[in-house]
Amino acid sequence: MNKKTSCKVYLIDFVCYQPPPSQKCSKERVLKLSRQHGHFTEDMLDFMKNFMERCGIGDSAYLAETYLNQSYKPSMKDARREVEMAIFGSLDMLLGKTGVRTDNIGILVVNCCLYNTAPSLCSMIVNRYKFRENIISYNLVGMGCSAGLRAIGLAKQLLKVLRLITDRSNKLLVKTGAPQFICIDSEYRKYYRKLLHRERSFQIPDQLLVPRRRSVLQLYHPRRRHTGIVGVTINRDILAAAIATITPNLTTVGRLILPSMEEKLLYLINYIARKLLPMLNIRPYIPNYSNAIDHFLPHVGGKPVLDDLQKTLRLSDDVMEPSRMTLYRYGNTSSSSVWYELAYVEAKGRTADHGDCNPWTDEIDQFPVNLVDCEPVPVDFAPSNCNDTSL
Image (cartoon, rainbow, N blue to C red; front, side, top):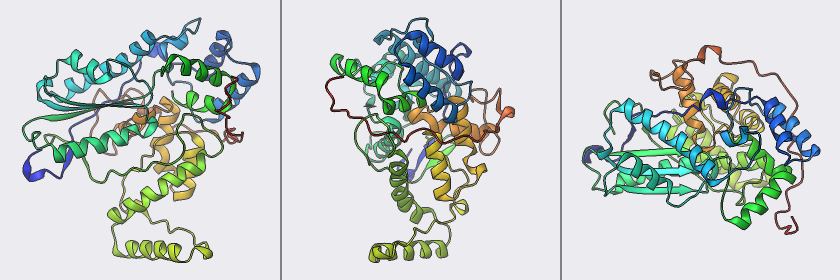
């Protein structure tokens, strides 16, 4: 970045981590291990079985090493090893692929949706790769699937306001999901694990979670919005909350990217009418985003969210293909899922060329797969009573 292009932010390249084949785990094996570990009731195991059959995840997704053991006794050591495998594996590929030297990286932003430790993940990376002593680092944790967007927004703002990053420095963004073991503090961990084994709404997120040289992308309009209540429980309100969050973001971005004045005018008239005449219950005008967007890559979340999003925005099956295939193959990788979707698009030859580091390279010809229609995911249960201290 230089002074002439200070308002433009480019992505040199990206990579996605692919766990070793030994960590592939079918849904049947997940249930077998869950029963073997002895932490779940039969009622909960039945719920897990029904959920996994309908959640859109295939039989080639990955599971943490610690969960694959005969006995499930997670520890901080296991969590650290899982994070190191994903982060170091990705960074080794990225640095090798781009040829960027670590002493030319001036900003480091790391986000992980739940895992928080001391020393921080930033410190772990800086020490491993011997980054320069004056590197500006930020460690973002506890923001769930939205952490990636926040990290991108932070990186853009840093590149715009920190004038000292006007040399050949680059910004490194590391995005990772949550390790299988969650540690906040000892008392909360005991409480959370009891909820995990007894409350269905705590099971859903646990099951789903699984510079301008040759730049491949340019960042234009990062937008984010916070809605909902703090926590990791999911209940029947998830669909409404997801759409309620996405709709205002599309409203904001729509006026910036809609290609024709006609679309913008129709959009504006509809927006004003709904604000001034709420009693008429005017339906929101859904612009034809395909005129402005080549690839629509929503966070994979889960099958119900993708289904409702597709219906609300009137998106075709082809448009939703990268998201559904990413959910099927890799599950919900939290804040990094969009990058797996982008890698899918590249592997299909629909955008920039892909290389050997693409996690889809060896099997892209097998996709898309036909997803058998199934019943809705069972999220029609009451919200958890998280204030119940008797657990």
